[in-house]
Length: 392
Image 1 (cartoon, rainbow, N blue to C red):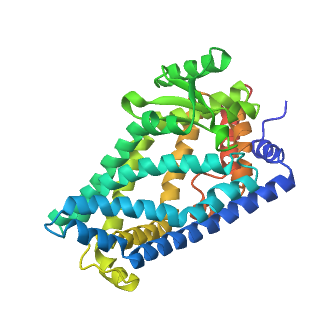
Image 2 (cartoon, helix red, strand yellow):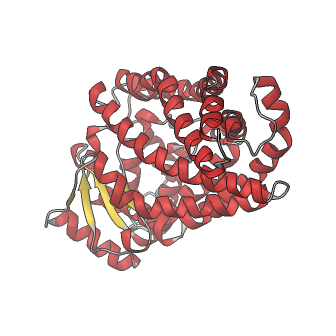
């Protein structure tokens, strides 16, 4: 019997998508790289327009007409900025997040349904935004020189807070989550969860096809809110049991390997560096944008703050992508060890090529990919199969 060749098996999986399909995926993916730049430009332009409108300055003056109301001004500025930014960026978001997805066949959601989801997200975002910036501006006022060192911890608290609450307060507003019905799929997921030591009392199927035709599952939440959820797209795409085990095993890997906590720690460290740069650059950027603020502690300067955040986020894209790719590779390896479904994982991965070109250059992957390339991930699965799977 001929020995198993991982390279040949990988090539065979890549060939299951037609050359036209690969070309379409490449066009979609590389166009998405440009969206990062244009999205940054739109955010900065929106911040400049909010400054020029003078709304925040007038609201601040009105609220503090008789006495200082620092916390109230901070909360009002955050709420007004969030809503104005949403409105100003809406045409761009319609194009980038809905029309473009629809034109590539990656969503069948009507525009009205998409907009409804955005409004739900806006409500939650405004609440979090207001609470965070009220706390951040209080920190800036209390420690004007060293606030940025403490702000990373503040960000970590809010990230964990969101992880705990999102599965029970936000996600059910966007999608319908129903307990996975009894049957082979549920039995396979429960068995895998028991083997992995993952909570298995909350296993759901959600109508992910409402927003996207992408193939996905997740283990979301922390502590008592943790639950396993599988998009109905998995089953509409003809997923077999090996695919289900491979994909769900990957998502369980994120949970078991503590990627949320490691990601929060890494994000906090990056946030400290970003806040330090904001401390240094704010006066200059405020002057260039024509913001009527004397110091960083003035909430009227929030659009300047957010413009700098958007710029630093764009520049840090390769760093944040690298951190995410490492977590995704680790979750793949966990799935191989626990589920041992290399072919199931490979078949599932091939279905994602339509929205993530399979074989980028090393430089393109480093700069723009928040997951390892599909070809690289399939090759690793086939190498595992060569040494671990039955008959390998």
